[in-house]
Image (cartoon, rainbow, N blue to C red; front, side, top):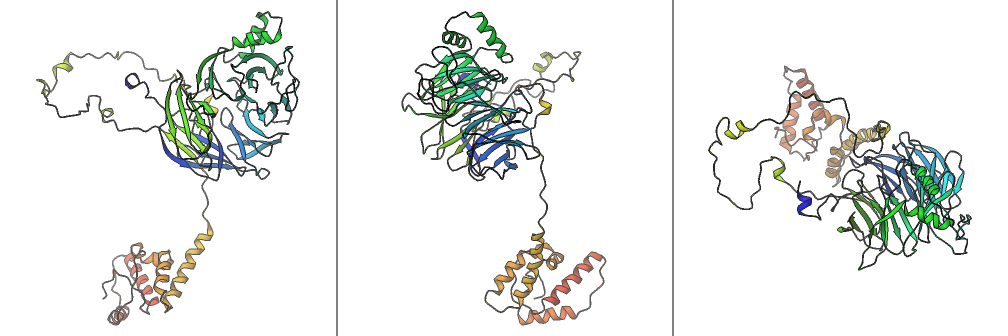
Length: 549
């Protein structure tokens, strides 16, 4: 309990690779809200859903129209839908339970990232960030797109939506964007080092937060609780901003700020409003190596920040606490990191390597024997034990003095349900946590192999080649109808050739009349054994356990 106080660097974060998942070449991953299901997009255009509890594949979503690599994958709020973006400029919405494709939309540019609206259980709107184009709101039901502004001109007007150029003529590359927790605002980070807060319904810039240095923003991510915003810039610095706006009605609060602030210059007014929305909280960087960061994100509870090194040939991830201290560096195989995700509930990190493997990082737990008994004490060396005077009394004096602090007259509340601390909503009954298991039918072709193996066994018995014994042994290992009746204990034993005396004893046994047995089961078993002996009367094989020779 007091371990975090004694050791400030000890915390609930992963330390070692527990295992890895392998299925094709996986490119991107995403957990559902509970962390019970893990979705992975592959290079062949398919999407695999893993049951994270059993580490088995629960479902595979495959579209015949899509064979390009998956660029991003996103769960809906309650896990019933999955949005997949691919390198063939397509967006595909899937029904997870039925495994059916709901809709497929083809954009003009390749979407490198796509996120579903977080405020709806069955969202029909998503946010896409295409390559070399402005972010856009996509209506999945109609296929319509609405491009979002990426900059504000000096005159205060929203810049026209050109394909890949600013109004002043400078070109821009990928623009990062994300929804807030409620989904009524979109936070856009452009290549000028500006965070724009946009009303996605009216397509209007309501606030702007400039970043020191003006470096291009490559990633922008909200924490699970919506209180912190993370940005990854081209100046190799990860910045954490504290969100001051209310989580439920951020749009209304922004409208009130715009009404109260009186500023003639629209650009300055947007900056003043932005200063009342986001406050710089922490900055993370590697002061020595000055490396670029890749796929930064928060932990499930928002206490930790993780980012992967963008250097090719190393699988290295850095973990900071929210106070800004570097607490752990995870080093894996010498493979570049493609994507990573932190488990929403447990201290587990999942990373995707260049080879397509998914590594699962978990905490290295050590055995603590004191956890089995509260009065257990671990000793580093032998100590002399001093017996108490009342230790072996029926009722020790120490227990007589103790009085129970529990009031037995209090009523126990068994009706009120405590709110799940990891739940984002009170409507968790609709949430999809696990996928039902579909049993696979038996393959009739395998049953035909069993019948064929018995015929091969008989043919191999009559052959006189040097490989006859090996062929007979290999065929005998396969289950045949004759061997099932004689008992399973002799199936894996090797057979050998009988001598002349053994053949004579076997012939006498066949001619000897059968004595009546008490049990009908034993009689049938003996009859079956005699039939087997007659079929194998040539004497090539016999049971090692027989007492006939």
